[in-house]
Image 1 (cartoon, rainbow, N blue to C red):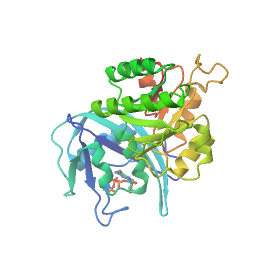
Image 2: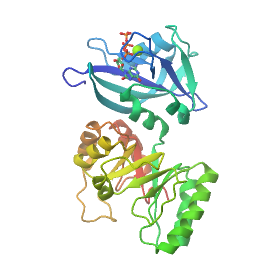
Image 3: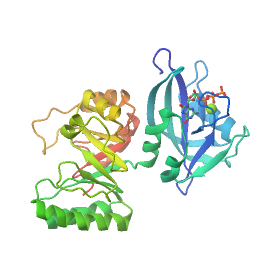
Length: 310
Ligand SMILES: Nc1nc2c([nH]c(=O)n2[C@@H]2O[C@H](COP(=O)(O)OP(=O)(O)OP(=O)(O)O)[C@@H](O)[C@H]2O)c(=O)[nH]1
Ligand SMILES: [Mg+2]
């Protein structure tokens, strides 16, 4: 439900079998007119969100939804309007998309979404649409072990990776980085470097801020295409959102042997925290691949893990 006063809007990130995403252009005189958007519209009185999404996508782009899952919820205050954008991923649909209202319409590769001008509320929706549902954290006690773990992670189909290897000596971190970077390039894996590593490789895809580095930062690091952050509570998540981080990792959700002293947040607190920020959030700590669905249903992006993908 929308909070009191917010306009509840059902929005669809519709993806075809090639992975392209459907965008349309808002009418000149509409709210946020002339900007690009994901098709969708306001819930009618008493209408369920999925029913509204079905109706809006039929009316605006002519498709029939065969399957949708929650992607992200955005609470945004425009100067003139408060909206709750309830965004769903639509990977299965029938009938050919058409611009039923005479609007401009395009199918766009997810990495090209940044070339279009969207309303301000859409920034985290675009990140959520571009990110996969699994984020691997690469660790290991030796160079050989790190590289063996990397092969397993890539072999298991993971395409988003954080190099963390904090326990290796600095000289070995550099060696490992060169191989990890080359392998990620070869397999189309996005590579983020943990901010605690003695590495300043701007050719990496991004940086992953430790929670300490996050709280010390008063603006988004500029050098990287992607900026992620480790968070443990609302304050850290909110700060991540405020400085313009692209996505967060929230931990620990369940008890984990790697952090025996940390109190797990549990599923309910995880869901409440995710609901309170406009960020794609990966859940971390004691989770298995099978838990992805549970995280998605709670509004999260997916799961992060060290051992989950090995
Ligand atoms: N559909 C859609 N609306 C968005 C997006 N981003 C965003 O801020 N909004 C805002 O959500 C609000 C409602 O969307 P809408 O104008 O599509 O509603 P609608 O289809 O029911 O409009 P209508 O009154 O012309 O039938 C608008 O204020 C719009 O600016 C987006 O990506 N897609
Ligand atoms: Mg609309």
